[in-house]
Image (cartoon, rainbow, N blue to C red; front, side, top):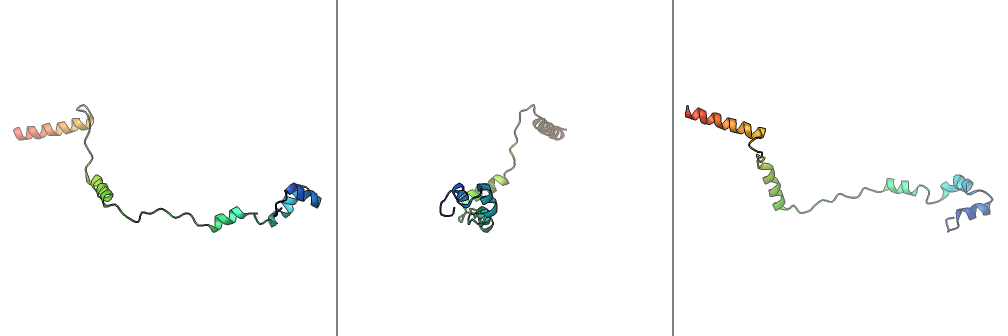
Length: 96
């Protein structure tokens, strides 16, 4: 079989079934458990790491992180209502 003979032919020549040949002598084949041995012996692929850092990208990341979140909302939304109430109370304090 190692030289290319089909298993059924080798089993017939030896006077046994393919199953008997495989179950009894299959572990002697060089390819037996080859996948497991390769998986155990191999290393995982290396992680891709950039050797050069783009200063433009780093500055953009820092700028984005440093900027406060944008205040959005309609005048009827809860956030805007609270903001308008604070503003009105400050104006009233200044007037009175």
